[in-house]
Amino acid sequence: MCGIIGFTGRCEAAPILLEGLRRLEYRGYDSAGLVTGTGRQLHVRKKAGRLCELLRLLAAQPAAGCYGIGHTRWATHGPANDRNAHPHTDSRGWIAVVHNGVIDNYAVLREQLQRQGVVFRSDTDTEVLAHLIARCYQGDLVGAVQQALQLVRGTYGLAVVCQQEPGIIVAARLGSPLVIGSGRAGRYLASDAHALAGWVDKLHYLEDGQICQLSGEDCELFDQRLAPLTITLQDAPGELTDGLLDKGDYPHFMLKEIYEQPEALTNAMRGRLHEADATAHFGGLNLTAAQLRQVERIIITGCGTSYYAGLVGEYLIEELARLPVEVEYASELRYRHPPLDRHTILLAITQSGETADTLAAVREAKRRGQITLAICNVVGSSIAREADGGVYLHAGPEIGVASTKAFTAQCLVLTLLALYLGRLRHLSAAQGQRILQELRALPEAVRAAFACHTQVKSIAEKYAHVHNALYLGRQYLYPVALEGALKLKEISYIHAEGYPAAEMKHGPIALVDEHTPSVFLVPRGQVFDKVLANMQEIKARGGPIIAVVSGHDPEVAALADDVISIPHVPEYLQPIVAVVPLQLLAYEMALLRGCDVDRPRHLAKSVTVE
Ligand code: F6R
Image 1 (tube, rainbow, N blue to C red):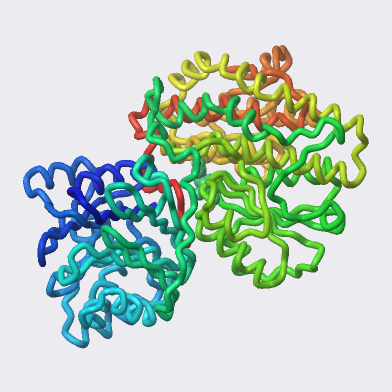
Image 2: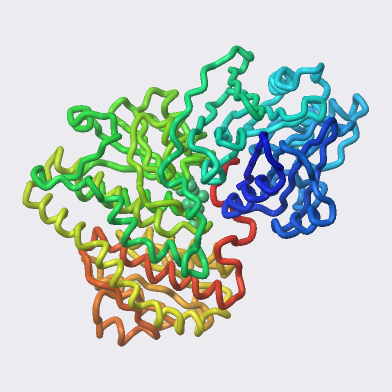
């Protein structure tokens, strides 16, 4: 979602801002802009569309100056056009603002300002901030920002410059991430630490309510009342390297990340398999075994793909640990009032660690005194810092907007957690040993699943023209059906629905015709015969069937139009292997339809608005 970059120092800002914006592109955006300053003049350049449009504009109208801020916008208030792109300025053009988040009371503020004669030039909520800051400005930018923010309700990560104060950037955070860093050339600011790769060796993640003022030489931090705070600079995370955004030999990040899964799984397991105790163990749960034995119920929450991993977690934890689990969309949970007792813990699942609804659900649970844990990929992210404890995925950065390796790593960490909780309760050492052994073989099974790629490509050619598709699975593979359908719709724009296979006849079967393929997940397992019967129902109505099976399965082959074979693994690990052909199918279909696989329309990598 929207990205922010800022620089003030001893060299030209525009090239740094542009490179930072390029690094933020993966988050998803629809327009981009920047402002730099020379003497007492600001140079605002902004353009709808991809970054190349902004580059073209800058070639014609360069923006000079050694300080500035930049932004990639993901439209919330007003369409994606030049006018609505950030930065936004006040009426005199003294103040320029870039902003992530949403100002909830912007309509009231806008009306008040209009009554005072302010003419708005965009449809955005952000422009309100520029006018408010200008009205509060009396020669002290940080003071003006602080005062203006008192009037605002909502969420923000924002950066502000003022032509009266050359070289100064003021930034503030409430609910939308910002990180500041210092490097040899000067001071930097970004909404995502990846954008600062190679430039900084020290970082400070702003906390909610903090305001900071950057200059080429200095960095000052304040609380909401402008009382000075001490900056705690941390080492930049190890994975913050220049090579981060490199696709290597792959044409797209998504394909690279699909193929990185065996390694990501190995990394997620590294150091966590405890041979002697036949269990898994984790460094960051911050809960003792005794405390975990007290847990009587787990509520898992997340959004999108992470929510689907949570559904896999429900099956895993109930089976291996015999603990009741509920899975709830974070956007729903945050406004619900489920009765919770002190033996219930909240487990948030999130790749980015910045998803606004998931963060809000964690905060709400904490407010009510619940213990919160997070399974998270991005080290130092807001949710990782907010939760009482948690487990990092160590899957490596995920840049493609469609989540792939994070999903399989999430399912794996949930398996480890289920094993750990199970061993604290009823699982025997022998059962624990068997699970450890099966886990160790898992990365190889995923690698072997890539053998289906050529065949998946030809299946994609057969079906790339369709308008609808169904994904069907049962038990552990029901969430995988949901995930397969999500992958297809988000990157190929084909309408796809995931269902528990038996639910079909309660309505969706009406959609079946010869132009609507059904992707069935039918590896051998306890409900194999039942899924076979569900396949018959589709077949009888003339629907084409693509079946994902383990090994060679003549019974399924007799019914299906196309069969994709994956390696045999135990049922509780099938989600991690069975999702691979679905990821590849979505990728190949999207390519054939000419879609931008890594940057699908309307989507953002990390959804920082509610
Ligand atoms: C789909 C996808 C999204 C995310 C969702 C949650 O491919 O990536 O559905 O899973 O936006 O994001 P995180 O996991 O960062 O909280």
